Length: 542
Ligand code: GLN
Image (tube, rainbow, N blue to C red; front, side, top):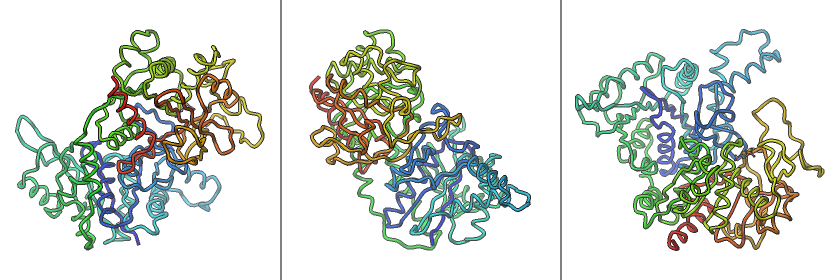
């Protein structure tokens, strides 16, 4: 039977509970245990699919097509275990399911209540699909004491009461440094633990985020007032890189303490792979600069996985990747501005995005990359813009555009039902419901045997994750190919363009999917590895 580790947060948000959960899971995995991590989000959205990237950061998509919290990206990157729909739940989803059942009369006249109906649903979710696992780590979003988090805390309390020794509570807190006093302060941690015990939960381990080393006296004080063993007060100093966190927590004894709590003995973890990752990250042999021409450049969380995948590409090539976030809108008027900003770049990447704003700037960046032979990587909207650029500037289709930006006579990109009459294609619902109208999750693609991408992947059959409504219009294939943009990857039925490339360019690839979602530090995605390798060559040329 699986053992459960519940991770809560106190004092403030943004303490890095997700990274902490991912790192602990990686450490347990390195000791030979089978792990899975789950995220409980107390907000009322059914999923983060409709939330603004500015507010909530990136939407992480799983193979089975779930739109989930970006913490699931950390979980995958640190454990290599592919996340599923079953690994992320929100209050919104729970309430929706309960209300559907209630309307159907499933509750046979009973009063439907937070306890037991909502708490039971949370418990069921925590325990579903956990056969074959040694540890299930459950991270609760938000901060202890939040009104919307209460049903989750209550469900955990009940699970603990039912499973006793098979559960462990890890509470992540902040020990702030007060410069005026020159001291680290333990009071917020004490208050936050008191809040938790008031809800019936005694934490077993405290992970104390601090910006200065925690003196032994303060550690002892926290242990005494919070009723935990001193060795279970784990200091968590800010790390130099997120990939150093597992090693750092191990050095502080976190995984030991967890095993001790469960009364388990296990061999020391094999951390060679983490040592190698940190070494590659901290001791690069060069540096390249990648210009990312996007829309949400003000908030890095909006492109979380992309950021990480570029770093992985750097580790694979032993170089540091410096990312220059460029606001596409700035490129809309002025060609001189484009050249000034893009000339110093060793590679240009146009990432995914929604809506028309900034797209003319993205198209201009594609053109710059094509004409100047700078390595170019277009992802999702980035590929679509590469196709519009090709249509306008190399195939003579002046009015080429995407129907996402309004009606056009030349829909080089469009909703498939707008331009496809071929049989066998599913007509997608385009009703008023914004959730659920996208192509989501893993789809296969076939790559042309003699193509650059087949070479990059070392395969001609791939599966990648999608999240988009619009598709490149296969009716324009011939005309775009004459202009030099080759459709080198297609859906297995040959109807949906998945990859385009330029054989006459050093490195020019556009993909309809999101490869960044599947890149891992110990297994960098081949496209990012290849793109950074091309940027390294570019850096040596200039
Ligand atoms: N807006 C485009 C679409 O819906 C691209 C989406 C994306 O880049 N993820 O097809």
